[in-house]
Image 1: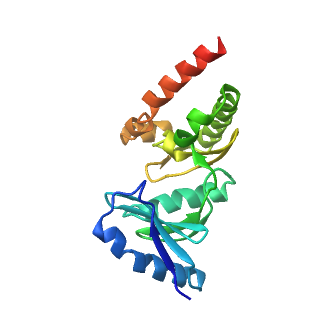
Image 2: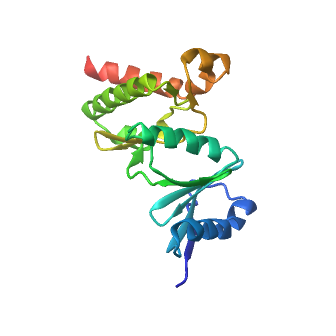
Length: 197
């Protein structure tokens, strides 16, 4: 059987090393899942991060994948259903569940104010649960929040997350990353407030 290879050209700035890693993606899938993949698609390429869709899984190749996998493993163990399921990982790679839906960034302009309010309410609850578990996401931007209609279906990209108290997070200087998406959020929240008046 021939494996189909493709590139999501809308979202990917193509680097030669990302294309060369197709064979590594193939070999890692075969190693862990003990079968040939049907398709491998490069869906994201940014600096040292290459993300592939391999059949119905996501393969993330990144120097910090081992750390990110440990956080996801902890959240899976704690029953936090909005983190993707972790299948396998190594020092610089991990296979995780592909979360179906759109990012909040992609979906926002198509959503009604009621849908947005429901998502924000669910997100607020999720952040509360994470806080109880002493986890700070570290990069809670609209591109890392997965939605389907009026349902929050996942939170992705845990590489900047911290497990520990807020004092640990602030001391290590990670709070700045948590605010990266706040300008976008603030603008959208003020638009929503105006619609609700």
